[in-house]
Image (cartoon, rainbow, N blue to C red; front, side, top):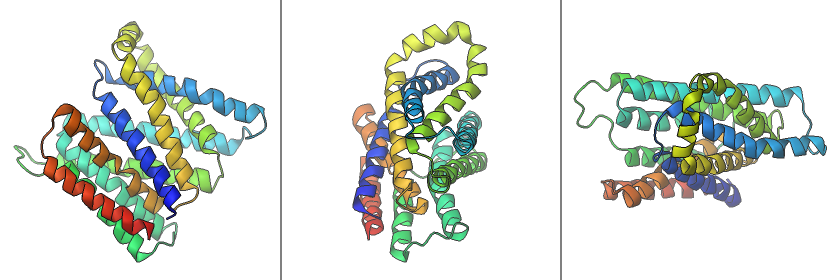
Length: 286
């Protein structure tokens, strides 16, 4: 994979880690928080997409509408599945299983079904990256007072939804030749429309939720689209089987930042995982 493409994905991983940390400061209703930052992201990105259409840079076409609609549905399924898993099982089980399963399924599908040609060294590097991510996330089976099976199942379902939207987004920018900015702007607009009925049922709480979370909302609204548009750009020039595990290096970055900001424990394990991820990235560059 070209070094400049790796740089793009790693910048996206940093942006992803930062906005995820910002979301930890969220207070109150989760749905209103997600709806608020999705609306704000749409306000930032949709005008840019419209300018691209009106100036003739990009066309408003059926492939664009179809691609954005399917992507929005996948992302909504991911959000619902992840939240359902967190509500019914332990986060420490769901989270690492989801983030490890997603890139593994993506890589397997890309190699077996899409017939992407990847060198054995690059495949090994991707697997090493995933191993480092799981090390940073921690052992989901340690110290459990109840069976981890429900969390494993919800984590695997979440990982499958991650693989679903990753593969579809890759197809949209490579097979349908959609521009990342206009494509993601359409996705954000449709996600906003899908989330709005639930938010409007809580309309009395919207002003309070926005005031309480103004900082996190703006941070996520800016960095989340930036991270994803960079990933979509990388997918145009690199195999999705390698982009998927690389983008998950955001977990390592976020974990180290969480240790620094929130005084979370297990620094040695986090550093070891970060070193393993860097070794995997080095293998992918070969």
